[in-house]
Image: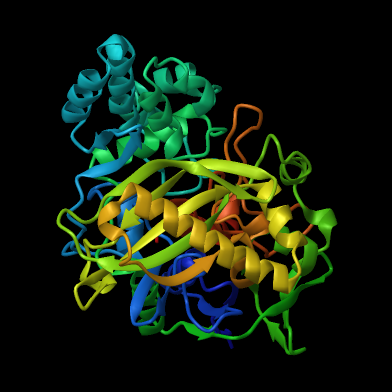
Length: 498
């Protein structure tokens, strides 16, 4: 008699990649079980409550909100978005200020060009070139239909047709840092503008693509906060019959005869499965769940070269303030030097969340600020004793508050502290390497990390998660879950259309 028992896919991690893998596994006819160490879904894509206010940890913009794109179809399939989704009424990327002058990157590129030229007529030629290359960068859409190793000639031809001008962007800006690019502009505010949003070591094309995503209507912010999006995916997964086990940390992946056979939980329980999909941070994967010998060469080289492959995190603080008109802006300010460890910072952003009722209570809204942190800063935080850590946070919160009040006098004496968090927060909650909330930064010194999802020497194990493709983020995470299931189907010689 034929055995009709479904094959089981075990997924490690209940974040965006984990739920994507689970949902696509169920669509493909597998059983799916997710094991998550925390008590709630989402991984990095979460938020939390303090003093009755909601603090958002993740979405500053969501790539893939434009209908009729491959990534939108994936977000819709996993239940994160739908055709009736309401988005935040925000019409700009961000604003930069310097010495009482300000300039904004509007979603309307014509408006941006006019504003930048009015600020600095001597930079007109470079400004027009910048706007033109942002326009070209709108063609760079995340390919989410299937893994690139499954592409055929027709797929590459179609990509060539839709991205005819984007190669110009990569030729001009593929190997130049934002810091170097900013020096093409004469006006100091424009120099700050180019380096404010992403770390200045990033390749310039990353910034152009990010801004183009917003300007093209493909980077909106769903109303309801990051955690709500994760909960929508959890609901879709459960409604389809998926099983998720919270507060179940994984100790290791079991390998027998070069084949993944299941997982061992922290409590010693063995869970047997036909396929295993880890969606966790790759540093955790190869330093705990699997022997380090299985780490791909390109990943090992990246971890060994932090200057070429830096990790990015942040020291962040949230306050509640009176709700003001035109809320929803992200504004970068210049400030008196602020020391964190051995480094000094003179720029930070202040973002108001007054665009969404989720963040508003009793006529007040949440504002958050972030001071970008890198590997060196992580080492500083890690070196502190528990007492020193607490004292350092408290001191920095006071310093940050003073600088916000100086930049925004209307907030003076009216700011209520809600919470502060550091790279160690991300390490503790998400097992994030050096507290990084994305994958490796793409710099001119390093190559883009692209894992094919399978590890040499282990059958039936397919890696997913944002660390499989730098610079990571939500698009990589959600697509990687789908790709993992497609790779299983390909191996089984079944259709990958799911």
